[in-house]
Length: 297
Image 1: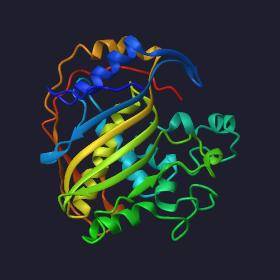
Image 2: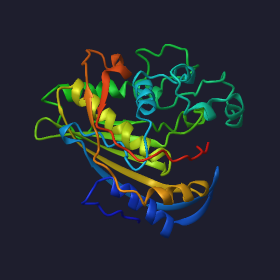
Image 3: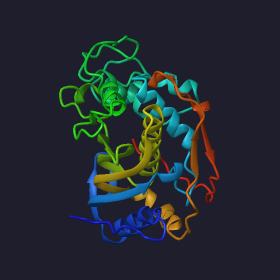
């Protein structure tokens, strides 16, 4: 079992140490889409106190792209065209007709099947296509969690779990989910934390997004449910670096992190689906220059 030490000087150092340790001690594995260096079982922790948002600073994180995807999940959408219309292209490789065909799926281009948003909001509802209205079908896991968080008599529950991993529908998804389970916790009556388990973590490109995305989600739910954002605990089953990413990541580990920025959510809405990109403002985000890496699909 690989165990990452908790960095004391700057919490981003955990990520840099993970890159270093995979590069030095990871095993070479041939996977579905190329060679990787792998360690099994990595953990990180990020404080979200004082409205901190852990956007990595040793390279620029495209936080608006990340937030667009998260809001798309929250609305239960599986239609990539909605993201493309917002100039968010991270799902393009997995939504092409060619890729869908390779998965044995006969969906129209941009239809991703019952991926994250479908499971969060309509868990196990029979999937037809990305344009079908699934309201009141399946299990609305996110709505149930919000109900608990808003109720002082229920918010200490240890059952506030939301999963994207649905074995019944994996073969209908363009891509099986990587970040598969999140659990929310309220301590000290109003301090909101979450723990997220990710079966597979692309350390170069995916993990910085995942850190940002679930930290954004926690902040949104804290605002929406009148709670105080506290901590994000991150657990990765298979943490890996693609062969093509090793050289650029070795550049990144030489950089010194800056202080994390803060997040201001400008509005609060009665419905969780109503939050939009313009409601989020990032303050004091300082970062090193961009590092170019190609996404593996």
